View (cartoon, rainbow, N blue to C red):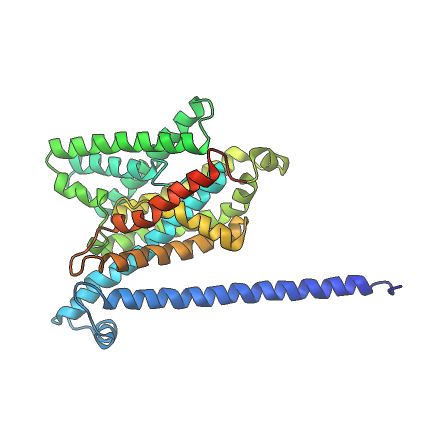
Length: 353
C-alpha cells in the first residue's frame, strides 16, 4: 500500500514534466518558425526576375546606395513585397480560423463568405466617387467594405432555413461576392477606372506600397490582439452555442468581437494587395490538425503557417513562367481548389465538431 501523498507527489511530478515538455515544444516551434521566416525573407529578396546575390542584399540593408539599381530593387520592391506577403498571409489565415471556429463551418473563410468582395466593392466606390483618396482613407473604406460583405452574407443566412449550414453559407457567399464583383466591375468600366481597380481584383504583391504597410500596422496590431483575446472563447463557440451558454458566455458579444477582428484583418489585407483567395480556407485546417482544437493555439499557429504559405506561393509564382510572373491567385488556387473539393467530398454538408 502506498504511503499517503506518494501518488499525489508522482502525479505532480508527471504534471511538471508534461508542462515542461509543452513549454519546450512551444519554444522549439517558435525557433523553427523564426528560422523559416528569415529563410523565406532571404530567398524572396534574392530571387525574382533578376537574381541578386546575398552580398548585394547585405549591402542594400546596411550600406544602402541610392544609385545602385540592385539596392533600389531590394529596398523599394522586394523587401516590402515579402513583408506584405507574410503579413497578409497571417491575417487571412487568422480570419479564416476565427470564422470557422465561430460558425462551426469548415468552409468559412473571408474569400468564400463575401468579406473580401465587400472590401473591393467599397474601394471601387471610393475610387469612382472620391478619386485621389489618401492611403489611410482607403484602408478605412476597405474595413467598411469587409463589414458590409460579412453583414450581407450572415444577414441573409439568418433569414433562410438552414442558412448557416456550410454549403448554404458557401453558396450565399459566392452569390453575394459575385454580385458585388459584378457591380464593381460595371462601375469601374462605366467611369473608366478599370485599370486602377484591376489591382484589387488581381492581387499584385509586386506593387506593394511601403507607405500603406506602415499605415496598416496599428490596425494589424489591434486586429491580431483582438484575435488572441477572443481565441479562448472561440474554442467554446466551436463546441456549439449551447456549450458556450452553459459556460456563461455572452455569445452575441463574443461573436461581435470575433467578427470585428475578422473585418479588421481582412480589410487591411485587401487594402494592401487586393483579393487573395483560399488562404483563410486551407490554413486553419492544417493548424487544427497539428495543434488540436484549442483556438488559443490555432490562431497563432495559423498566423505562422499562413504567412509562410503566401510568401512561398509568391516565390513560386516568379518561376512558373520565368522571367514572367504568374498571378498569385493562380498559385493559391492550385492548392485551394483541390482542398475545397476535398472538404466538400469528405465533410458533406455537416458542421465540424
